[in-house]
Structures are given as C-alpha cells and as structure tokens.
Amino acid sequence: MVDRITDPIEPESTYSSMLTESRLWSRFQPRPGDVVVTTPPKSGTTWMQGILALLISGDPMVDANPSEMSPWFDNKMADMEEKVERLAAQTGRRHVKTHTPADGIPIWKELRYITVYRHPIDVHFSARKHVANYSPEVAEAFGLDFELHPADPRDSFRIFLGEGDVEHGSLKGIVNHFLQTLKVEPQENFLRMHYSDMKRDLAAHMEQVAEHIGVSHSPDVMASLVDAASFGNMKANADRFALVAGEGFWRSDSGFFDSGTSNKWEGILTDEDLEAYDAAISELLGPEERRWLEWGSG
Image 1 (cartoon, rainbow, N blue to C red):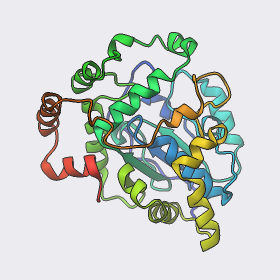
Image 2: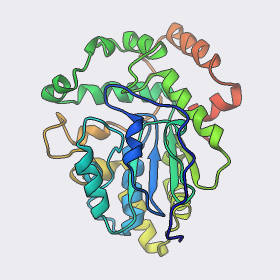
Image 3: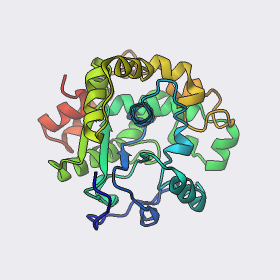
C-alpha cells in the first residue's frame, strides 16, 4: 500500500442541512487505505460499517462501536476537534461514514469508497421507524419537525415524494446521491453495492468488500465473519453494532436495526400512492437506472 496521499478531486457541490455540513471535510486528514462509506440515510450504512469492522479486525466478536470508531465525519452536531483527535489516535485501518453524495466530498485515489443503495420506498419506511425510535430528549434536541413525519404512512409518503426531509431521506435526495455516484464510475476505488444483493448473498458481497479494501481471511474465519455480519446477529448484539448504543439516544438500541425486511409498503400504500411514486421516479431516472436502484442486480 502506498504511504503518501496525493491531492484529491475536490468537491464540486456543498451540502448543508440541520445535521450535515459537507465543508467539514476540509478537516479530514486522510491516510492511505482509509475507507469512506457514503450512502443515503437508512440504506445500509451501519450494516456496512459493521461489515468493515469485522473484515478489518478479522474478529467476529469485535466491538464495532461505529459512533466512536467510524464516525459520521461531516455531522456538524458532533464535536469536530474530538472527532479529529479520535481518528488520529487510531493505529489500524480506519473507516468513516457520510451521507453526502460523491460530488460533495473530496476523493483521494489512495482511499477506498463504498456506496450502498436500497429501494427508495423501503428507505422511507425504514426512516419512519428510525425517527420513531429517537428518545424524546433527542428528538427535542434535534428540533425534529414531526409534521414532516406524520403518523399516517400515506401522508409521510407524499412528503417523501416531494421535497421531503433531507436528514432522513427524500426521493430526490436518494436519486441525486445515486446519480452522483454514477458520475464518478468507473473508478477503481469506488464500490457500489445494493442492500437487496447483500441480503441475497451476504458471503459473496463480503468477499467483494474484502477484495475492494485489500484484506483476506481463511475460509473458516471468513465464514465466522459472515455469520457475525448477519442482520439477526447485529440486532442481537446492538451494544456492539448500533450507533450510540447504551447512551439513551434510542428508545431501543436493538430497535435501531428494525426488521431488515424489504417491500415494507405492501398492504399499506395504495395503487394511487404507487402510481404517484412511479411518476415521480420516472422523471428522475431512466428505466435501467431505476431498476438497479430499486432491486439491485438480482
């Protein structure tokens, strides 16, 4: 592995919202081999962070502790000085996360980037559960506008199809993130994955991630890491894999992982709702791009 960093491709866009400030990337001090996980919210971010912790350590019992060890770098609610110091203190391979699209972050050729996408409607339904799991104190501290997250899922879905809540995902935000990734492809240090593909064959996709970041393990060790990366295991061990576990941030730490299922809208959204979604996404993506964003390669 190279031991120096060259100048990056600089960001073309700035993203700023209640939680995110992409200009904070100017504070990042990269090292060769760092991994950046860049996803729309609720698309498999923490799952990928857990997978990276397992693959880098080779230990199925690793304490992934993503909030401390793999921080959301451009989250402006966190103390930047503490974040920078904590990353500088790490002596092994490092990984960080962001929800900022590829055009809003610096891209160093010596780093590895991993994107993960999920069916947009599943993202929305997962975001609903995510917001509902905030402790009342956290929701108040964030100044969460519950009018953007109404109790009726059909009402919240209509908001999602419009401008939505950029912090927890909107259709336009998800599509923009996806399109910005497509713009930088093909690029050898970018790996694009889909939630549904990972669910169908986790072992094969963990091998793909391992190859991308340049680590390898014996078949027996790899099998144990795949077992540890299963949704059920991460949910059962939320104290090691969930964000800010044990700090009263969530009503339930294990609830952070919700169900891990797909097609969450079935029996809830009407034909009229799905027709509105079809019209909205058809304006944003061509048929092949849409098919992959929704269903992956399967």
